[in-house]
Length: 69
Image (cartoon, rainbow, N blue to C red; front, top):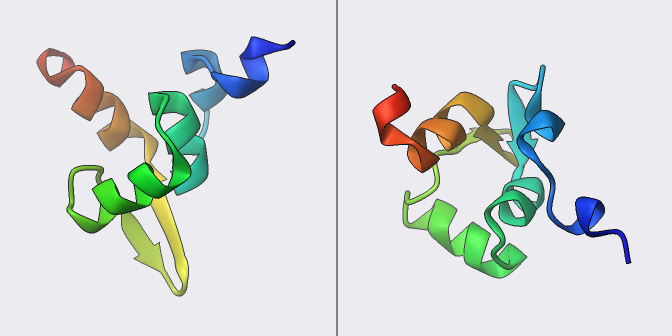
């Protein structure tokens, strides 16, 4: 079983400004529904473009390492 597909690394985020909520969930190791709930509760930073909900990579990384900001 290829765990790299199930659990993306930081290099998977290189050069990307945003990721989908599903991709953020995989990166965080949580379920899709938990990620959408966290977005709804504003625990995961997000922006809405039309019907799409995207997670800014820089803000996601800052959330994971607040001392890096």
